[in-house]
Image (cartoon, rainbow, N blue to C red):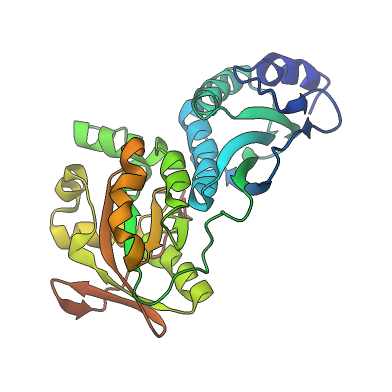
Length: 325
């Protein structure tokens, strides 16, 4: 980037609302220095968002920033971690102060809510892209993994599913939202709320978990493969919003969207029978709706059932922002 890169860094990134006591040295040096609590482990995730792949180049930077940080927060939520620090690598075709101002507004609003401090990063010239590395903390040995599911465990998801895919359809139509329904779905695509508190609460009850970023059916397959098990989903039990039902036109179409919709940033998790009665208590302080959608079984693969009958739905895979962007 040009010689005013450091002015931009100082103006937009060095001044921020979150200043954590465990950051010994933050922005302004070659690297950051942080202090870790005793008997804890570091959980680290990195996500990149690229214009034309994950968001439109002319998308509202406030919404883009929220989406970028939320995707990382959701990864930590799935592990049961407490988010703490992040670094940001930002590539831009040219310095754009109006875009940066909007981006920082969205970024810092979400970062402040979760007490995440920006501790470093990089800026460079090139096609518009955003890469965030987020770090969090878990008590040693308590991180929720993908490989802990066992036959007999119950399968749950948080929140509603499918709204993000419907919102993406609205975006890709090329037209501004023309109804309240379209506006609602568009905002649900951009403004997902990562289940950070729920993830921490689930450390006590979940045997495995992950966040839904590529679609429930696709993401659940990672738990099944890592754990060496299969699953049955009762698709009529999938939680869907009234907005999605109206948009999809039928409960069956809504269920299909719920199975394939990516970038939801809800959690999918498994719970042993012995812990099933403790779910409500564990999540009581988080105000997180959860729904049991099926069960883990012996064997391999994923079976879908609709109203008690096995179905072979051909689901379109989620590829973030499809190639027609």
